[in-house]
Image (cartoon, rainbow, N blue to C red; front, side, top):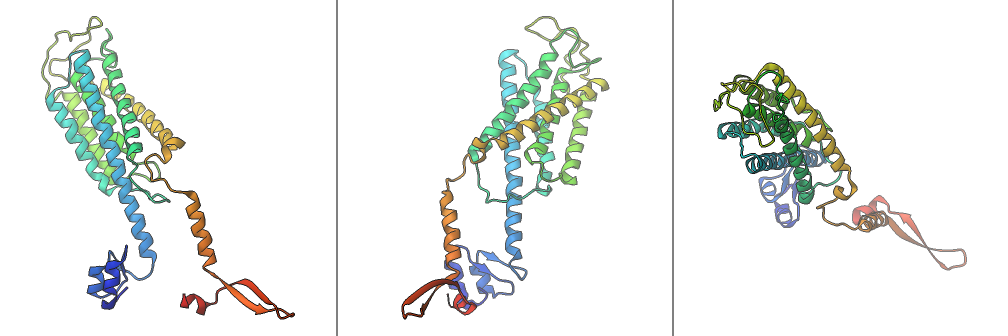
Length: 319
């Protein structure tokens, strides 16, 4: 509607639409107000809403997986080897994750072809699997540090900062996985994550916020621990490059897992409201029948003859 007389109907309707140039009363009563002429604004509004929904879903999956990653690893490391990451580094991990994902609001997002809805069971299943994979990847790094030659460490390094760098990189890159691959990420998102990754690398190289545990052997339930533990918590460049390469490999594995989970038939409609496919077919049939009319005429013998014909424009306007 567009006039004052349409305001009551717009208010009563399930979805009132005020067209472009409508009165203030109609706009106040409507649920949707067109700012441009034509029906293309409806398509644009639906597309934009689905893009916003996609950004929200990507962030929620990212956040759940990130939290599970830290919770699973920190709890199991405290229980199994009585070790944890320092509180200062955990704070920076959380801060870096938040700073990087603020740019998600400006990311390029695709719009689904069918109506979207919150499939919470599916979101939880995918997020839990991704969180477990991230925790296992961090445990692999920690496990190599039990080796007599230092495992992933090439010359010297700090356990705390190596784990910090691996966690920061894999968690920041996780948003590239959950956002989907239908569109390229926006420059703002890539730049934000690049800056955060650079800061995490500097933290690791220079050993910022190190606890300065010295050269004493680190407790190891499986045996000796002999590699060079730098007094200031610094890590050599070669080790940092190896951690980066390892994190890239982990991200690729997680991306493959995410893709496979999204094409599993049993998960495709998990959490969606059940709809009968025959309802859509019946709606299409009724739609086609509404365009037809029954034509009555006499045959050559004076009998009644009925046939279905298309409605004229005048008949359609009357309906």
